Length: 278
Image (cartoon, rainbow, N blue to C red; front, side, top):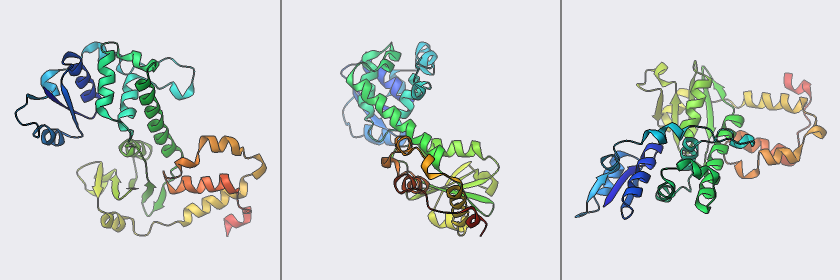
């Protein structure tokens, strides 16, 4: 039996239940319904089913426990639940969905036991959960939106699949502004309905983004840096703590983080408050 499922929380849970009931089944994952259909079409002559034909719905007891927070004294784990564990683990670029499905199938129906990460696979996906969630939090903390006319602009380069979560957060944070996001080679417009688009988030070409932005000025960012440097006291900077909170390996996320890492490594420039007003 070949069972196709979607790479999301609901799809993975259904796939785990289906695998628990049919241990010999071959699981096939796809990012969309179209991709699943294309992959399943390769299995000619086999019994091919979509996961929702095998598992009509996720049982209520699983849904009820999905977003219950796991008790912990660690600040990094206070938001941990089975739902958040699966959400962020699936978005990690190292995630192998079939491996995660097999892990869930082994523990079903007591899925929350996975959060105790007592076996090697559960510990690995807990690490993936933390890596992905940490990257999203660093994006929220360190990306600065630059003004360009009546719009805002930001450039991000996440390693994991968190761009949509970051963009949803940015829209909630600034609901009254149109925001242009550059992400790798793609460009998006947030709050795009204000410009006549049919959706809140519109994917556009680089040319369209450039036309809307004009020339995104760096001067505002430079003014802020001059003010920040003139007010900061170098010998009060806790460099060890700063390096721990913003490791060099995260410098790829955005230009702002790369700039902050330079300050951690090389110190603050000798700007004076008078430079801020010039």
